[in-house]
Amino acid sequence: MSTILDLIGRNFAEPEVAKRLSDYPGLRPEDGGAVSEERVQPVKYLRSTADGLLIKMSDEGMILAIFLMSDGKDGSREYRGELPGRLNFAAEPADVIRAFGPPALRRPPATYGGRPLGEFLRYDWPTYSLHLQFRPDEDGLDLVTAMVAKEVPGRRQG
Image (cartoon, rainbow, N blue to C red):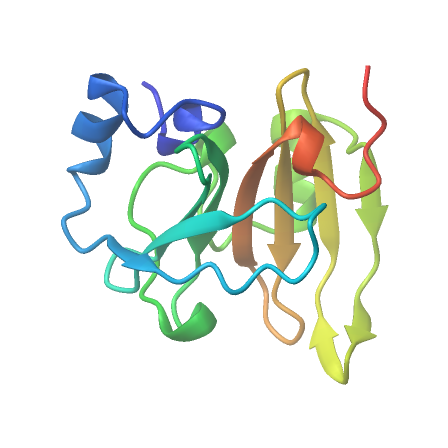
């Protein structure tokens, strides 16, 4: 069975992509913010807090990243679709490693900007990376993100 993450790198204008996203009628455009530098490409967002889903697209409509939220993450309800590796939001790091093997990057819990963050795992595949951010104070996943390879900070290309 395919997951919504299969849409990474595809264009919103493709009929199959538009049909798949129609499963989330709560998706609404959200401002991508002002671009202050010429080198930064403008982006667009589609968000549905009811579906626990945020999609980042290029100005041309290419899906650059898909964020699947846990319950309460950024005011969202929990994403109810299938997660990769048959995981669920109660998964712990050991469950993820059993499903995918050793990660390309593993970061222990930390504090960033005064906010505690749980453990972070990143898996790199040829066309995209899968990021799994765990809750800082509870068991389970906080956020599952898939991002096209060229958008992943620190990822070596080619």
